[in-house]
Length: 359
View 1 (cartoon, one colour):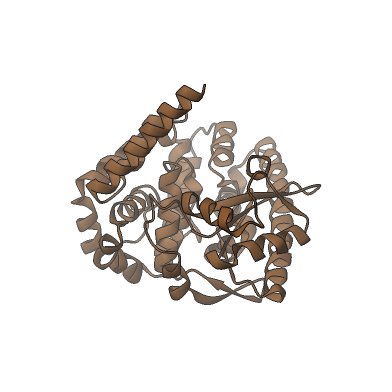
View 2 (view 1 turned 90 degrees about the vertical axis):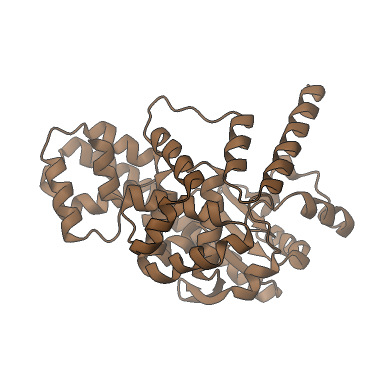
């Protein structure tokens, strides 16, 4: 019952019918401690709190309210801290002549929910043009960011070596001492095996946006769906908040998002990932998919099967992280083309063998 209450509460805004269903559920005996733990685990505590305040305030026990309020205080503080850091980064990049697109993080919270604190995040992600990566890293250094410990061997001033890193990866991790802020600088929004698109695709289709009233480039809605679907799939949709993002995106413009998946996603090699995201958002959060699109999604047996496995895992208290090969098999099943699946599994198997020999 607590799982269903969280699913109802994890919608923004909460319409009258959903609010009535939530009130009905909460009129029963509720394990408030478990409900709040679930919300914290799935990074939807702000949405839960907002829903409870708007339609069920009188039903929340004082101790549960106090615990949730304390948790939200930390989220709000971190959100402000990350938002300040992102604003400073955007300004520094602009003055340094480096183009950047904020990915996820507080910018996505502001875009989809109108309030960055409604979408908890732990770090910052920005996308830069591949040819400007070295300049971007220099500008980050000027703000106090350093390559994370596992990245420090990367020769950022050696263009040839940096190009080699860019061929095999898609981002670099940095940290800023003192604040504990982590930053990922991307030249691709997701690993190439998940999104086999040239980075120029996203820049050509980017649109004008704002963050804290400052002009920024942002991904167009269709590319936002692609990248969010790839990110959720990469982490096997283990967090409900990622599906909330998909549902919010669909609610903003159901026909255009759904039409993109129907008409274009297969041609760029990400149909199954996007379908999986939309099936889950529809099933769990009642994202308003047009009936014809929903029928087409339900006919995609591979995506439906993947969604069923994710639903079964999502709220299991004994759910453990996937092993490396289990994760590789899951990701391969989310890919469209058999050739891509084979090459990816071959790469992962080779990597596992080499790692075992190194041990």
